Length: 117
Length: 113
Image 1 (tube, each protein chain N blue to C red):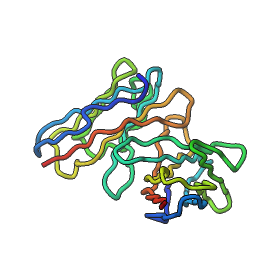
Image 2: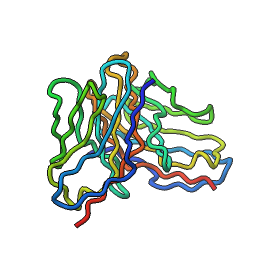
Image 3: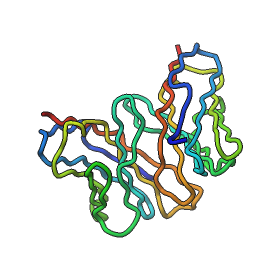
C-alpha cells in the first residue's frame, strides 16, 4: 500500500539557518513525489516535484528536495530560512508505475514550520 | 480563470440537509480532483475526473457523496443527508493533460451542526 510519513509535527528554526522538513514514502512502483505548502487561510501551493532524473530538485521560493531511493526519502530543504517561510508543509506521493487513470496523491499529515526572527 | 475557484468559501448546514460544493478549475485543465482535509488527518482523496468522466471515485466515503463534471469544466460535489463527521475543508484541484502537479483552490469549509 502507498503511504507517506512526515515524522515531525513541528519544526522550529531560526531565521537565516538551514531548514529540513522530512518525508519518507512507500509505493510499489516508481514514486512521483511532491511538496506543497499551505499558508494560513490560503490554499495549497505547489513547491516542487520529483518524477525522474537528478535526485536534487529545485522549486519555488528557494526550496529544494533530495530524492533518496535507498532510504525512500524526499526531504525538503532550504539553505537559509525566512520568517515568511512559516507555514504548513505537505509531502505527497503518487505511484508512477500504475495505470494512467490512477492519479490520486497520497499525502502526509503535514509539518508545521516555524521560523523565528 | 487565473486559478481554481471554489464556492462557497464557508458553509454551515444543519445535520440531515444536502449541500452542493462548486469547483471552477483553471481554464484548459482536463483533470480535476476533490480532496477532503480534516483536522489532524491530512488530505484524503475523494474523486478524480478526466474530462467529464470519473475513472477513480474510490475515495468517496459513502453513497451520500456524489460528484459530477459538465462541459469538461465546472464540477459539483454533493453531500446528501449531511452528518457531523462530514465537517471538513473540501479542496478541489486541477491539472493539465499529462502534467503531474495539480493546482488547488482555497477550499470550502463545511461545518455540519
